[in-house]
Length: 486
Image (cartoon, rainbow, N blue to C red; front, side, top):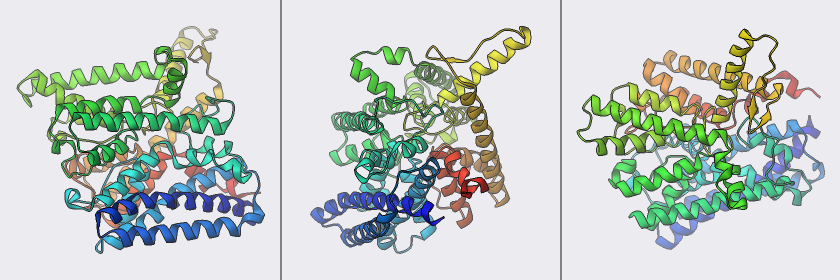
């Protein structure tokens, strides 16, 4: 067991030390502007850096190539451990913030969920909001994807880590021959998209600070805002359109963005089954909800109904969680449809959460094939994606994922009901946490936060966010006896 855990602890220490650099961003801002958070971020940096370096140095003699099980253990411990370090400045600055709520807030940031227990965001030191939004940006593509580009320098292969971290059912495909180059390519696209988003927000009317903050939570599909009223604070159709465009871009597989950029062609988007289904579903849902809201006299003009339907449908469907109105007060069909879309609208390889569109497409085609097989038992009609047959192993994996997804949502919902939540709040909160969406309905709608949760409920939410971000199996495999056998 020692020989198994110590190599993972060594790489974990490196990841923690690397993560400590992020503290310097809000620390520098607080120091320059004279905010009272300098001490909190300074202590947070020193503790995180010290523990990370110590763990890495003390395990140097155990360094070796990571095995597949090491990758799952490392990813799970990094994603559950880094939020604990991220809570240090929060606990030092907010005297009345509990460990439970602080951990929830940081897990929500790193998993790009965007659920919050904080209020009074407009009056907080900007460095606190910078910290929350920066963590969301880092979590968007996964801290470990960035670390994968550096792991070879330590004599530790990154392939196992990348496979465990990358969302989606077909994880063995690579953009470039070497896994390090793949990670660099994804981050290049992510960074370029972030720069374009920030400039667009500024041109649309945001301040540079708001543009920086909301870029971090737009391209990561996180949904955190530096204002309690979210996008209703700006009341700007131009700013909302910028958000809509970049949320939809971020919901598409980033490998498709890279292939389109490298080939200087839109053909990868045309040939991508996920992208086609995504845009058709979003357009159809927006028009349906627009007409529905007009029919129920929520708005008096088509343009007004379309504006609010477009922004909030895209925001929820892409698992971002921004809001420019209290859509929880709409007739129940509309917000329920939006939350339903959040289960599968985003693409595999995007920064979104949920089941992923690729899995839904595979299941749909598999179901159609089974119906055809009933009529023609001898027919051979394999599921095809991008012209290639999908292996039975992938199909079985998708079916297993769907089973675990359904069981997880049901279990979490029943836990919430058992602890006193009403059914609507319990079900939608369970879905919102698993999908890394953020806002739910009922007591935790778009204009509310999660501060009313009890301690046990908050820890359940934190676990659910991690479970959803790492797509079930990466964490659940740790609870199987076979994982710990030699």
